[in-house]
Each structure stands twice: as structure tokens, then as C-alpha cells.
Amino acid sequence: MHTHTPLGIHWFNHDLRLDDNLALREIAGKVSHLLCVYVVDPRWFKSGHYQSAHMGQHRWAFLLQSLKDLDQQLKQVGNGLHVVYGEPVEQLSKLISESGASVLSTNSHSGVYERQQWQRLKRRFAGVIYIERPGHCLFDSSQLPFASDQLPDSFTPFRKQVESIKVDHPSKAIEYLPTCGEHVMPSWAAQLPTSTSHCDFAQGGATAAKQQLAYYLFESDLIQNYKHTRNGLDGWDFSSKLSAWLANGSLSVRQVYAQIKRYEAQRTSNESTYWLVFELLWREYFYWYALKHQHKLFRIQGVKSKKPLTSFWPQRFAKWCAGNTPYPIVNACMKQLNQTGYMSNRGRQLVASCLVHELEMDWRYGAAYFEQQLIDFDVASNYGNWQYLAGVGADPRGHRRFDLEKQARTYDPDGHFVSRWSGEVSSKQLDDVDPSDWPIFRH
Image 1 (cartoon, rainbow, N blue to C red):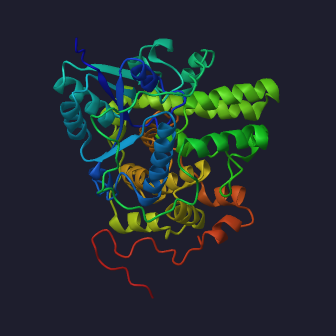
Image 2 (cartoon, rainbow, N blue to C red; image 1 turned 60 degrees about the horizontal axis):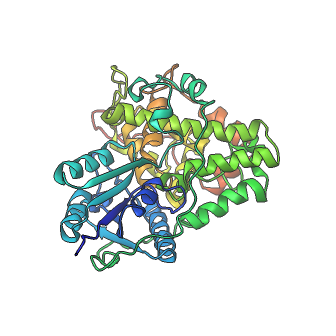
Image 3 (tube, rainbow, N blue to C red; image 1 turned 90 degrees about the vertical axis):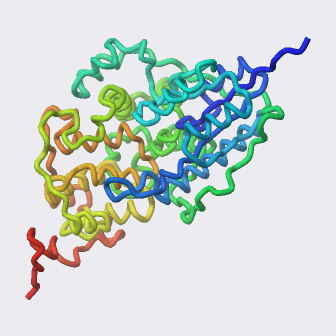
């Protein structure tokens, strides 16, 4: 008797790893053949509402490295990565129809557009079995002491409620996957954009991610001083540098948490080891914040009802992007970002404060530029942090304004950072025209 062999598709998104991948593990146990798919959306590379694209060159280079690493891992367990180019729902619909797939899996994501795509697929193919598991956060929604729409309005009450919850141990790496069968042979779309950047800052992929995690904790003991070094502006060792791998899921947040706990048990537990967990909880807060607020993540008034008084000054924005403002520390940070795809946490706060308070700009332009440039762009953390600083988000005090000269004296007292990234000011003049477009003449 002929029995139908079920084929499944796993849609890789922000889970580019075989370790701690619950959705992939579950579908692998349900099907005889498995197609592992990643969809590259052409719209990522086009300039959007705020003069920036979703995906800049540095992050694209890092993502490509991550996908190649994932492909190698999949080949070692009997499969491979199928990379397609096009609108995700259309491309996946085509694959489901052509292959007769009966099961589709993915790891859930807090981004509103990613969630909409998944819902559209579910409506389009009612007969398919859908598997969605948490892969981008520490806690499952069932573990939280509140409904996700009851998330506290600020971080501290959230932290106090979740800090004692036991985090599930990461699941082991998958050692075997069903083959793709004859349905679709894994291949990479020919029309993918070429990468002109090498992303020298960090190597993409789970292999490099695990090496960095081991280095920062067990090989160097750098974690022991994290709280004292984390405000650094330049260099590799002042912070964990794990954010880019966490953002695209080459590393799971539970893997990081488990290794910190292992380090504390085997070496030492101090204020600094706690502080790295504290930062993971901030990331967690923004994950649930994005899930709760959805479209409000991108609105000018954020999650508040009051719209900030801002304007759009094209020249000011261009100067901010290029690192050509009257503030040397801001210029150095922006030039570092443009050249490397990276900026320190302290730097991000300073340049955001500059855009919002000194340049009086709509915060969304800055958030969109970060989205384009940062290799560690994460929709929840990026927009959540920008809202926080612009006073339209989760900050109970509202409107954080930094004294940029004082910050420079504190964090770059010798001027090495400004000098290294050529942040010196060429002109104190911010605008070339006055608000009514009359040229400002320089005498």
C-alpha cells in the first residue's frame, strides 16, 4: 500500500542555528523529508519612509556569513539551506504548493510584520500543520506572571517580577535531520544582492558566535569586569559583543544565559556577571514590549498619547548621518557606525540624544538609520530604546537629554576616540539655510 510521505518546511528567520532550535527539532520528528528555507526579501534593500533601507551593507555581509555557516551546519546533519529571493509569503506559498508540504514550522518573533506574514500563510493554507515555538526570548509566555498585554509600563517592575523565573535550559544541537528528498534540491537564489562589505567587525554565524561566548566568559574572564568596562566606546573587550549573533539568532539568548550561570557556578559570581544578565533582561523586556505594542513601536508618539514637537530638517539629518555635527563625540560615533556597522551602547545613547534634543528631529529617522546600519539591529530593542530616549516609550522619567560635552570628558577624557574616528568639528554651523530657506551667509 502506498503511503504519503509527509514533507515539512522549516522557515528560518531569526534562528540561524541548530542549537536550541525548538521549532526545527519538533518538525524534524514529524516528517520524512524536510526543506530548510531562508527568504531574502528584495524590499529590505530599498530606501523606505525615513530615507533609510531596512538592510545596509554591513548587516547584509554579516547575514550572508551567517547563512553560509548555517548551510555548512545543515550539510553536516544531512540537509542544506534553500535560499530564495522574493516576498516571503509568496515564495513560501509557491514552495508549499509545488512540494505538497503538509507541515510548516518557524520560531516566533515579536516583530509585527513577521507576525503578519505567518498569519497570512496560516489563512492561505488551512490544511497545513503549523508549528511555532519561542526561539528569540528567555521565557515562554506561559512562564510570565502576567498576560503579555499586561506587560508593566517600565523595566524595573518587569525585572522584579521575572528575575526569579527559572529559565529553561537550551535544547541540545540537532544531530540529524531528514533529507530534502526529491521535492526541492537546496540551492541559493542567483539574484541575491552582492555584498560589497566584508563586515570586518565580526564574523557572522553560529560557529563564530559560540567562539565569542566562550572567549568572553571562560577564556578571558572579561565578564568579571563587565559592569566597569561596559561604557567603553572603542575596542573589542569592553563588552560581550554578542548582540549581532543574538539579533539574527546565530546564538540563542538561553544559550548565553546558561553559560553565564555555568560561569557563576564554576568561577565567580559578582556584580558584573549579574549585570550581563540584567542586560539580557532589558532585551527580554523590549521583546515583550514589541509584542504588546505592535504598530505603536513605529509611531511618532510611541506608546504615549502625546506627540513630541519635532520637525524634519534634511540638512541636519544628513549631517548627523555623516558625522558632521557641531559635537565631536557624536561625529566619532557616527563615523564608527558607518565604517564598521557597530556602535557602543553609550555611543547610541549620545547620538540619539543629539538627534532628538540638540537637532530637534523626529526620532524615527534616527531609528531607521540605525536599522539600516547596525549589524546587531533587532526591531524590538532598537525601536524600544529610541522611544525610551525620545520620551515616548518605557522611560518613567521621560526625555533623557545628555550633556554631550560632559559625556565626552567622562568617556573620552584624552580625546583618543574622537581623534581615531576623525570626529573633530569642521564647522560649528548646523544649518546652511534658515527655517524659511534663506541661505545663511558666513562672514
